[in-house]
Amino acid sequence: MPSRTKLPMPVALVLMAAIIAAPLVFGAAYSVHAVRAASLYPYTLVDLGTLGGPQAGQGNAPSLSGPGVAVGTADTAMIDPYGINENGAFNGDPYVQHTFLWRGGVLTDLGALGPVSANNSSYPNGVNAEGDAAGISDNGTIDPLVGGEETNAVLWKSGQIVNLGTLGGNESQAFALNNRDQVVGVAANAIPDPLSMLGWGTQSRAFLWKDGSMRDLGTLGGPDSFAWNINAGGQIAGVSYTSAIPNPLTGQPPTDVFLWENGSLRDLGSLGGGVPTFDGIRGLNDRGEVVGMSFLASAPGAHPFLWNGKQMIDLGTLGGQNGFATGVNQNGVVVGIAQLADGTHHAFLWMNGTMHDLPPLAGSRCSNGNAINAQDVVVGRDGDCHGGGLAAMIWQHGIPHDLNTLIAPTTLDLIDALSINDRGEIIGEGVLPNGNVHNFLLIPNF
Image (cartoon, rainbow, N blue to C red; front, top):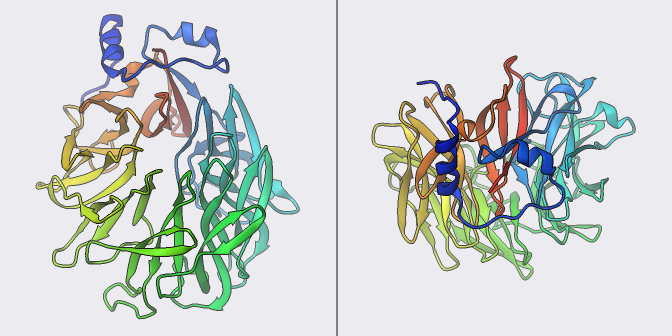
């Protein structure tokens, strides 16, 4: 793949004009000096740093609020006493990782559970407009059923960590919250379950936590369920077993998408072949529209879907067998990844019944679409299809741009753009020359 060089001033300004979707106004939290210093480029880069160790990342989900509010997980200087990569946030990283909050240029360690929190790891899976975050923390106790350190769902509210507990079992995880600090996720109860979605040994149940109480949301007929998203109105999207009889091909019971509202679960079905626990749900907007991935009944592969409030729509692919949706904005515009006929994959934007190809730059074969904002601007990455040659990307009106070319020279190689908010701020991951991964935040200068 050809090298990606910084653009000269006139080209950068042309791209800046092309990228603008709506006027954006900076808040007082941003350094005027920093913005002016980088004003030759469309974006100012902020390396969010770490908590004393070498690396940082985004846990299980990108977490960007606004304005200028981000959470992630970063290494501390402590070697994890429970073993390498105990919480799974970084592959092979031996350090304890803690959730951090970045706001107004300040990185704050939000800590972890346990009597010695410095020994326990945590990471976030969502953040709201107030800067409160939901996620997971080790608690310093060994789970006798799984043999590893227990994890509990947590809420960081006003900088303080709150253990959300379980449904009677040993484990729980939080995956999303709204601006009312209603939190959803999955929690273990005490009923033995060899089919546990997360291998916990007991039933895994979707939960809603609010006002200090965790509620079991039930299932669609099987033993287990998992809540992935909650919107401003309190609707919850997730997946659930529909029976306790495993499919002989997969070893798991059939799984459908659900939407919880007004105290009950609604079975949204699938595209015929059921949905996976992970990637089955990837987005929920405030209109109650749900996106994700479903297996097909009559053909191999899996397709992205949109539940539009009335029916589940197969969004198709770009000519290949597989694809999945990664997000949906408030207008029902969907972003995702789909295969082409030659087996490569491209990012896509689906709008008004049509899937639009978001190609990589010339010289790259594959692209991934990770997130979309209200202006239909998409961010993601491109590369060689095998995890090499990665570059963080942005698509505006279907045109790809390498974000590395839209910032001042830096030693941080931006490899993946994970989320974009409605102000145009972008969070993602970059690699330093020594191979360490850091989070980056891009602040638009327009």
